[in-house]
Image (cartoon, helix red, strand yellow):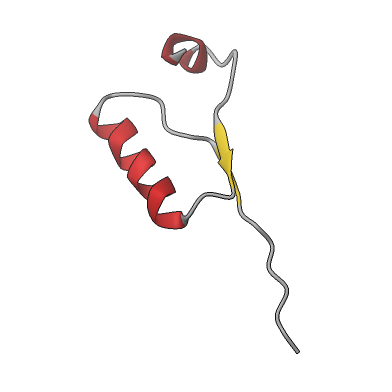
Length: 49
């Protein structure tokens, strides 16, 4: 899959994941020489009134 990502054929992203976990994924990808994630969709929260 890493080869497909480097070739621009596919992209990887995550959603509804805690920020600390997404940061860890990016760090691991970099240290292992893998392509990092390209998208993050966070849950939209409404403020309580």
